[in-house]
Image (cartoon, rainbow, N blue to C red):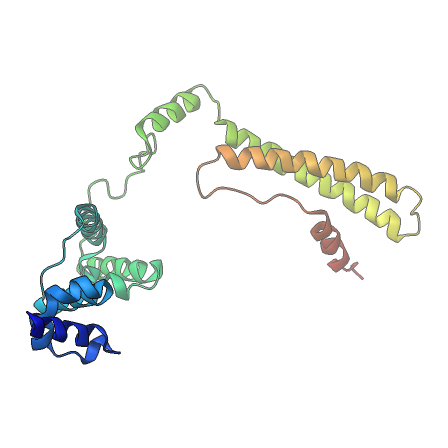
Length: 234
């Protein structure tokens, strides 16, 4: 017992835990746990790493990994067959579009578009197979009653207002350029108020219009710059 005690004291007082031999450490481990708890923790950590015992897998992380794998598989199935399994090599939508166009051209060369049903006949545009069924029904009801969706009417109103506003701006600008700048400040203030009103309609339009049909509002600085770029015809 005294011999084991002396070994434990000698090991506990050593300067570097990494220089301790494994055999002596195993023999003196009970005393090291009492005399030097920190060294005992290092011993436990090293033995667990050397033993190669499997680490416990977090069930939540395992579920997330499985879910990510399912999402990747679904997204992969959406790609053309030529690009499946190569998602990391796809740099942009252009790569997918190129593959689709190649397939269309190959089909045309092989005559797959010949003798299609309805060839030479007018298209039936009464319904849109790609639109939402509820929206398609609504649009057909509006069309039968000779009405248009709100965003269509608002688009016409905005375009008419922009054309009229630009005409008024050009007249006021021409008077200013011709030397009659007495009422320019008054006209510009009125035109800026009208510009805000048009932009409010543009904002409303962008909220209700289908995706991809949004429009930009007017900017006073850009409109003035556009007038400065216009050169009078000689």
